[in-house]
Image (cartoon, rainbow, N blue to C red; front, side, top):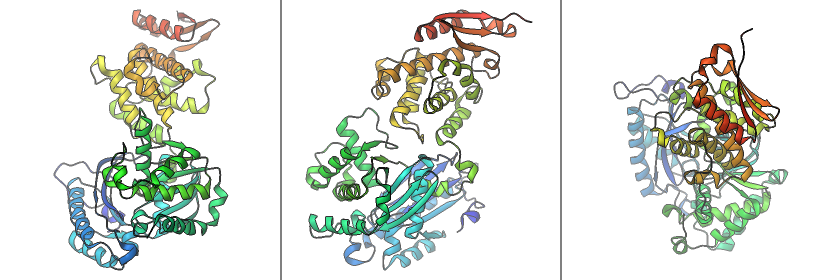
Length: 505
């Protein structure tokens, strides 16, 4: 059924709120249902379940879908369709990729799904699969520049990315399930090199980034995080420099399934495919010579959501869009981050554009922890921001944002509780987070989080002092709590604190 027709469907539990989009992704290795909540600019999977069926297992030898995998996949799809209807998903898309596309019995399998569920299955071409995966990367990394690689069980999609523009693309039969039956390591390696050698446009993107998508490649990131004892286990935009990625994939590619059982961080269900996935990445690194590997949590399913957006929606900053959505739900008096940021901005006139953006995000989120017991608001906010499904934010920027909001509630960035954030930052970045957090703390104390107050007040450096100016109509807002906040902020800037009530003209 077309998406437009699906939007009109309603077969849900009475009173259920409609959800914008659900995707059933029938891949070579797994079948997954993801149901997205608003906003679709940076969609959050409010339901996410997968079944590892291995549809493409043995296809390299038989040319057909694995019979046991097909039975398991069909049962999962029946469950997923039923769940999507009960959730009142307005648009349910069922898409199939390489295994169903290439299998001799793929069309028969699609027909059986459609008869048993009453839904239409869209078998994506290699070009479509590559495009949607690339859209997924752009949904979370809008300024991506380099090559996206999406390694599924049956194929590898490669797409050149330059900001919002998609360039050359290709689909290669290099999925771990497709090459698993080959005779030996040298044979597999030669086969991968042969396929990559047939993609001449890859050389044009040397020195740019490789954006890694797909469960097997994300597993590489997870294992690396575990080995490095990373304080933050967030896949999105986890980055390895090229030499580091090459060394790590060389190590993983030579491991047996038995040896991987003893390696920390290796998902049990990825033990078979991980060495082959690592080998494919390593050979691609040799050809592409990227500056780094950036792992993307977003892929084909998020790309399907991104494709539904108009140009205005696509141009939105995914980080700020998500922050605004959180603030509209959680802030006591709605989102007035712009007013807060304008109030504190004179203290941060030397901020780079990147810093201005993180500071603005912190201003938007500065009131989201109020529902929690006062003693735990900082800790709650820290965890929420560190683990939120943000896009377009590096690991260090995420830590900086979390630490600033933590300080807004606690008054200090150096607490041991905040270690998962400050361990990812330099001393200068911790100091910056402290200053932003204390400025937000003053803003919230002065205004009680109510819009309209800060627009009339001024906070600025004044010689060797830090000056807060209150207009006459807000003179009554001066008090002991405000004075303490101004003094703490002045101390963070190594300035004396000054509070002045302006006389009426």
